[in-house]
Image (cartoon, rainbow, N blue to C red; front, side, top):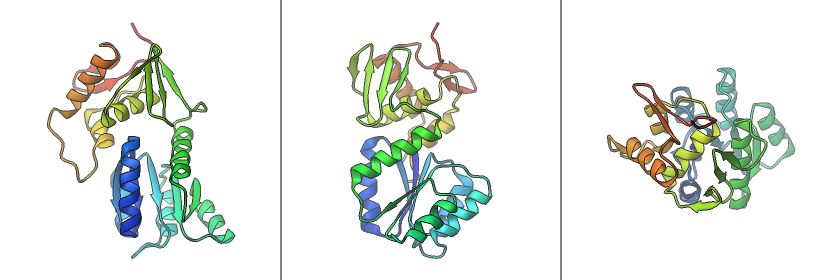
Length: 221
């Protein structure tokens, strides 16, 4: 799950990065509205956490412009502006949720999970497929009732692919989900992650389509 964080407070931005990365999110952090608009026009994200009081271009303007361009990525406004009219303006401009600073980190995480669940069309909090069960709130993964220990990126890869069974993911798309702008990527990193998932779960879980990408089928052979 790739998240764009737009926050000009360096302390808060750093704290959010540190708190959310262990949850399986790849966090790209920007500090002004112009940068955010450019990033949203060129890169795919699963969620945007957006401050309103940003340098160069305020958050509402960013939100209105990307919605006018047809971007439907979930947006959670995170701001100190607590007036009712500010909340109305944010939601009417296209925000999916609105959280006021200061906030409780556990509540923020729960709201992020809810937004991602709704955007993927899932009503249930857990994902169950082919003997595997994922609980996003605890990041617990079970296979045939037994716990499976995954690394952060293995978990993210499994979550993304199981959220859309039957969907073919290109190597580049998966890599964008797992790695932020500031992270180095080994040339065989994706193949290594997929190998480990097959080994920890079962070999036919992830099917390779040569020259195209990877897919988790809704039903196994």
